[in-house]
Length: 276
Ligand SMILES: NC(=O)c1ccc[n+]([C@@H]2O[C@H](COP(=O)([O-])OP(=O)(O)OC[C@H]3O[C@@H](n4cnc5c(N)ncnc54)[C@H](OP(=O)(O)O)[C@@H]3O)[C@@H](O)[C@H]2O)c1
Image (cartoon, rainbow, N blue to C red):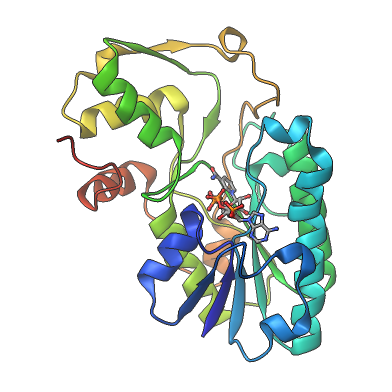
């Protein structure tokens, strides 16, 4: 049985949906900031999906973000090391500065620009120090939770047009595909401890929004491009945060599907509830 802290979030939900061998724990059942070895003992692995994911709120709430994204993973890693339970921890493209020109390798220099990114990076460091595995991903969407894909689908039905930033590049990742990859990783436990797993290919938020409209049978020309400067946010967004899956494949793991075909599969699976 695999324990999934943060099991009621977007990714945790899909892990539980994929395997009967997953125990998805709510934050009330298992608070990672107070975890002990007894909580993780006897499980075949732990896949940590618990996180403070409110990127903008973290700018003014870094202490809380640090507790969940850095202290919690550190405690979990120590608990797992004590209990002899392998730990897989999920991290983010936000650990990179976001000014790359080719997909980031796990070994590339980090340099987070946001409070969220800083706290996630410290979580990574603490997990790796205790011998755990860290998997960075990007632009996650799934059926359970709020995300860009669902937001665009809602806007399609309520607005004649929508303006979306076209100067941030990344790779959308369906949480179902990532969950399958993490389960594969838990079975293989390769010697490489720091890996990237995201949807194949790359696009911009504008490109993703157009693809959502296509999936809905709506005219993608109703999505218009704009720039990051048009939509100032409290936390800076990486301009380029495509993650290379080369190390993942080299570790003997199957690459995640291309983001565009994954989006089609996600719509077929009902990632966005059909309109009444
Ligand atoms: N979403 C993305 O676009 C994205 C991109 C890159 C990386 N990631 C990473 O992917 C992982 C999964 O993200 P997600 O999208 O599934 O996030 P999510 O939907 O926000 O889920 C996070 C879960 O963590 C739980 N949690 C918060 N504090 C906790 C604590 N102290 N103890 C235990 N559980 C706690 C939350 O429960 P409550 O609601 O009860 O607090 C929530 O269910 C995270 O590590 C995230 O950093 C996400």
